[in-house]
Length: 252
Ligand code: NAP
Image 1 (cartoon, rainbow, N blue to C red):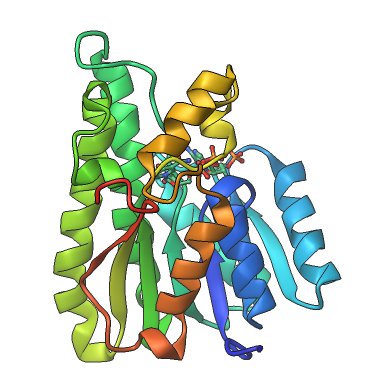
Image 2 (cartoon, helix red, strand yellow; image 1 turned 90 degrees about the vertical axis):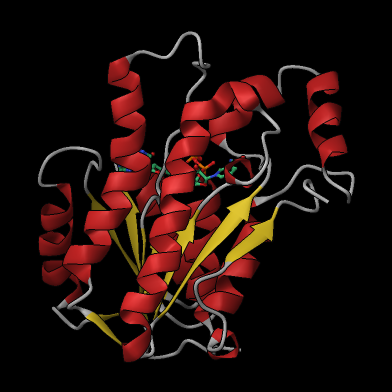
């Protein structure tokens, strides 16, 4: 069902992984999708082609996040490529991880984590909000690690998602009067490039990750995308300011 027909969505980091899953699902639901990427234009073009092949509409939009002026440059491109037609759904998904734990992480990497995972979503939303139509949607991709110390060595990464959660809660009150909902979706371990090195290193690593979930398997981008699609849809209109667990019961 093309329930998002006539709507426009922007998915940051929509070119790969979870973001790609979200972009493809929103495209299938009928939204025109701006597929944002950082450096990998080929991946974004491939995502656009997949959406179009399924009968949807999409365009690619490249902008490095976590650098000065990133949000303004992103919206300048969005306006140009979309025909300045406004926006209905903003998904702040782009994010980076780190292998550096509490003892190892240095200031530069800490600052970069916060710049990409917390500061960029803040300013992308702040500068984008004038384009967001009343009744619109903001979905921020958080992490199960912001509410459970399941991987305590990833403390700095978890802190960035904690900041995103606070942003989500407060922004729901700021934008609520305009009928705009703001929610966070928190994945557990998902099989994407960011995890490939350790997750696919051995059968034991895969089995250990699967065992964390109550459902006994590793998550897929589609598992998360379907939750985002609900929040983005008309059916999600009365849910706002929430942190939605999409960890497959890893915290149960
Ligand atoms: P991924 O496969 O590594 O994909 C990341 C996406 O974000 C790509 O489209 C990438 O574009 C873009 N991106 C990354 N850094 C960027 C930057 N500095 N500027 C612009 N674009 C940038 O990651 P993922 O696993 O799908 O993760 C997506 C989100 O889910 C992140 O916020 C992550 O923290 C969160 N999450 C993931 C998991 C998991 O297990 N995978 C679990 C919980 C939460 P380019 O390729 O062009 O750089």
